[in-house]
Image 1 (spheres, rainbow, N blue to C red):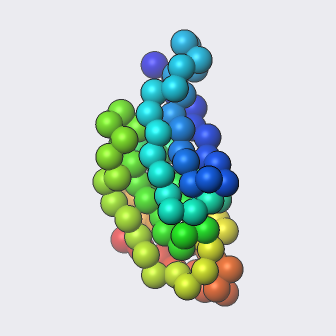
Image 2 (image 1 turned 30 degrees about the vertical axis):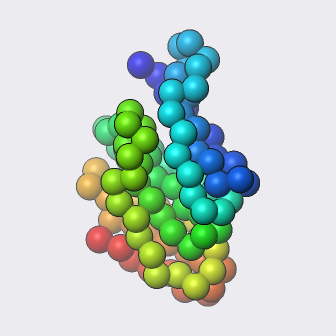
Length: 100
């Protein structure tokens, strides 16, 4: 099954089935979503937000698998390293953090 993800300024992450063009699942941050990335070889998706968190979601169930906190301002970008990801973040607070 081919899937796509979208993030919104209302904090919503939507998972779409590309074949049927139907909404499969939604999840919610407290504030605007700034970036989305699929975790390699898995149904997991990572999202960052103006709410200063990075979250890992199971795209099938909508469950939040993990949340990383530590920034004092919006997360502008992040990178995932590995298939059980280490997360490296960059924030408007002027800091970069590494979460393992």
